[in-house]
Image 1: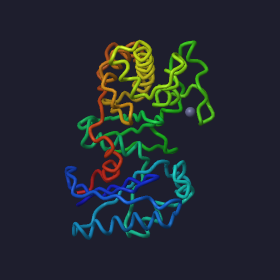
Image 2: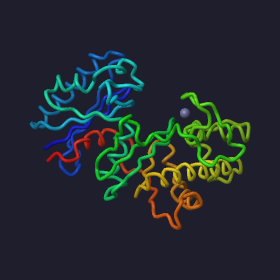
Image 3: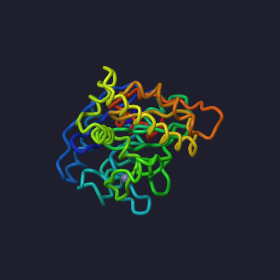
Image 4: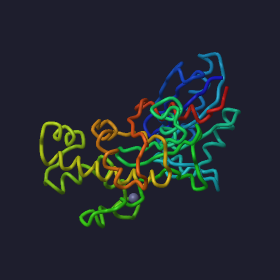
Amino acid sequence: MIRFGIDLGGTKIEIVALAAGGRELLRRRVATPHEDYGGILGAIAMLVRDTEAELGESGTVGIGTPGSISRATGLLRGSNSISLNGKPIKADLEGLLGREVRVSNDANCFALSEACDGAGKDSETVFGAILGTGVGGGIVVRGNVLVGPNAIAGEWGHNPLPWPTDDERPGAQCFCGHTGCIETFLSGPGLERDYFSATGKRLTSIDIEAGAVSGDAGCEQAMRRYEARLARALAHMINILDPDTIVLGGGMSNMQRLYAAVPVLWAAWVFSDRVDTALVRNVHGDSSGVRGAAWLWPDAV
Ligand SMILES: [Zn+2]
């Protein structure tokens, strides 16, 4: 059985076909029809049909997209593609494709991809933490995404930064309406704002890390504050979930120094005499979303 994974984003729709074991058979992408719900459905259906025709085999279909499907209503919410919000995308695609379709949040697909055949392979519980322009996450237990009645399992970005110091309170205003959210500290823009408020200078997060490597004191201090905050935020997750492996994704996950520094720092906050949790960089990079969508059918054979 082939698994098709589809990453439905605001600018592109990508499909991947995975053979058993995760080998990639084919990958295609098209531009996302702009704010045209019917057009988006049609583009997805055509990608699946064309891929099946090319491979001469049918398969399961999983879709990863921003936002989540409400268990209560079956409607998508929180998508950055506004035309998808409030629409029964799962039911409509099932009608078009004549089979069950599984839809999950793109952060869940990231965690699932890494848990199935990526950096969290062979771990019972994986927390996939995305540190990019925003902060999100997903949880996979024994190869299955943990969803929850509110479809928000793993969404740690809008919890408050734990164990805040006096100068971290109340923290920056977040778009969600609260202040001091983890996202306001640990996103790329969060690091950049922190560096600016300490130095009065504007640098990208990539330049801040590079500056630290070349010995710039302001950059180094910003990176150390970032690492200390990430350690506290992840320790808080470890105390609740106790995952075997934490896989980092998003642009900030490319900062190699995090993997050595943060596990040293989090020991002070984890309620245990030793911490055996692994902190690792993702394996599949930008492909995690589309591959994880395919793995929404973990047991298909
Ligand atoms: Zn928030």
